[in-house]
Length: 257
Image (cartoon, rainbow, N blue to C red; front, side, top):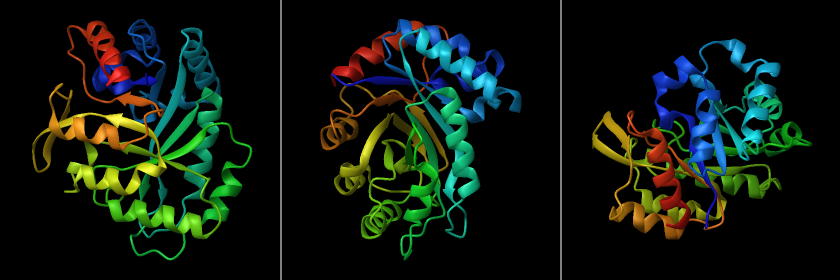
């Protein structure tokens, strides 16, 4: 059985921005989730990212028997491929206040033909940090291509800093930039430490995250290729009129899938 995390956005972007993350913590716990992913972009104001507010939210999550993930839309690398050290340090500081197990950033502008990954600089930033740094494949070509991630991990290995970060593998996001999820799983599975689970409907830019059907051939083929022991996050929307029932149903299903 895998740990299952409920991503806050599963309860609805507008609902979380309106009511705050804390309202949904109890629902996630009652649904059987092991973890709860806090999304910085869903904070209604910067006050919610203040240290005291994050500490309070983290305490609420732990009081319900769950651990947390802290997700920020900031990227690890700038558009020109340089390490964004201020963004990384900010994310680590906020994640530490929350008491998060993982801190998740987007990859950003790291190039598939880069010759340096700034492994030593990343190592200096994460040294002593409790949250584990993971980078996620996004929906844009910048930070959403298999070749970028493959090159990143190759260079970190070469620089002697292979252990500074892991990967959040978002099964659905590969489709936005036109990548093949199965190819991504084949190449990147050794680096995956957290999985975002969703299927995708629609075409082109008009794609939307949806719950995977039990017989979804792509989803069913990918999960066995990824590490079984890593947490699986629910990042598709629940029905607005039955979030508690959906949470329970999908947590049970994903834990044993």
